[in-house]
Image (cartoon, rainbow, N blue to C red; front, top):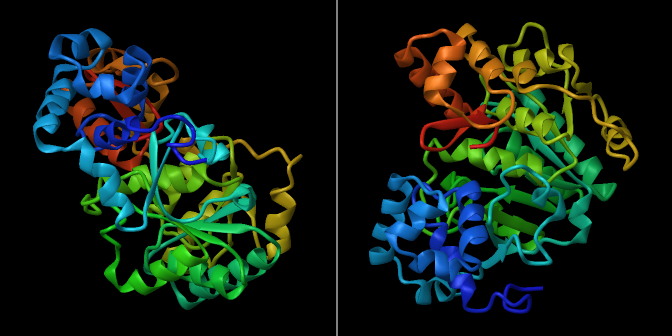
Length: 369
């Protein structure tokens, strides 16, 4: 059902408006809904009420400023004029697998269609600078998996992502592209034609409202959605510091399968995938290997973030400190026995990698972005 059919009606405009507020991520969005009941009441709340609800002052200030710049009455018309739907977490057609993750986006913007067939989905990701081997492997696996009824999810980037999307289309199947920008800012621009084809044979999806550019900080957030929509993530080709490893890390944290295509020991572009296999990811040399892992009764191998995303010594110490509830940065520094300047810099880098997230008030937890 649409948001209107589910009863959100006019409140949908305020859901969309809240996604435009800097600093209001999934957890703070949930906090506002729990406190005020509707997005409209949260949008109109006073500074005092926002602070009493648990928002930090910076986030509350951002919301107050946004109210002067954003016109909720125009938000729904703006997306519909571009053939885009907004699906909220309260809608019946919000993807079930995505709803299960820790920090599911409150609103998904969709061009195309999401459906029940997408419950059997696999993320195929890898380096933008893919080798011929990487592109061929991604494309062929996507073709065969699409023919077997698997929806292929990726990030529309050059290299492995593009090959995966094209393979799914060649196989006559469905594919979903998750963007790190608004749906009016297709990135990279040379994939605009591919994006149109995907929207006719699957969907373009993002949590970012119209007008948002593909800034670097958005990509880890996008990656958690790529893994969250799927039963598993297959890394086809990735170097030691590839962003594809962040997607694999999210998959592991979300309890989903982590798979990897073996590569040459002489290729720097396969160091990340070979390391994944060494650390417990399922090796994939055929579509049958993937299908065996995606069976509903199959239990995924459990990997940790530290197994997947390379950490330096400081980052390893901080990950061990962040084991459960949110921890204030002062307490993190005390437990880690490290200088505050070093801890602050390391946490900022770890947040970009998607290893930790800041909840406000300088409190940090593992995972999410």
